[in-house]
Image (cartoon, rainbow, N blue to C red; front, side, top):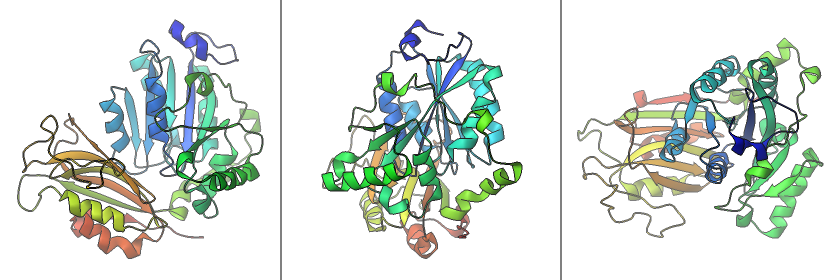
Length: 374
């Protein structure tokens, strides 16, 4: 383990062969990836941190963004670490440890993950050289009060954490922030709560070395039957629409018009469409919502390809707000993508025609999973 890691060492005495693990949770669109990337920028390159990302769906969007930042990433897709993929997490962690010899592993869970099964899995791997250091929960100050009442997952994430990270607090009024904090305090009074400033993320000295006491194996309370009941918790809360379109340089598979696509995003109801996350090929580069009132920027010769090829973008739309990140050097796994995106929300069935039109998708390019409300 690098000597740089000493300032981030847990209070528990762990030997050099043990890898501390930090887990980030938070509901859909809370801003986990942005905070993690900001955190990693503050860490010395000599301190080797690798990222295990879990996506519900297989768009692999944030992994592409992380790779643009030259971070080692392992992906676990098409399922959730807390249930469907919990058995595969052990193998993924072991492979990361063997391949990268990390000083620390950060796990970013899907927005619909329960923290307990993930924590217990890591606890059970102490003999394999892993130490659960902390569970950090990102709270979306704009939207938390809206989905807290309907999402058991969001409440669990806020309740069982070592540190609450209040994200997007600058975008609400003081009164609205007080209400959010009151709601979180009703679930979790004693846990420290920290405002995360835009562009600054969280200090590594705060995030690392917490040495959590949550979810000790001796406290493991649920039976196998209870665990089985968790397996479908995503289908009970969230509708899922996945779109996969591939580009072959024909008129049928042309890149999307940026103006029309931005107009489509703006037309979606924020209360029902929680998240759109994926990769889209647009005719030209598009600015983030906050950067330009015109939305579509002039061509940038360092990024834009020919008009026929278009420009691959990561699109990240959460509760009515969106960002675009052009991919300067897309790898071979996404080089022929036209649209590869996952849409999550509530009552999406009635919006399916609009979603299909917005992405120019045919029936065979769409896969749907409707929530089974209890």
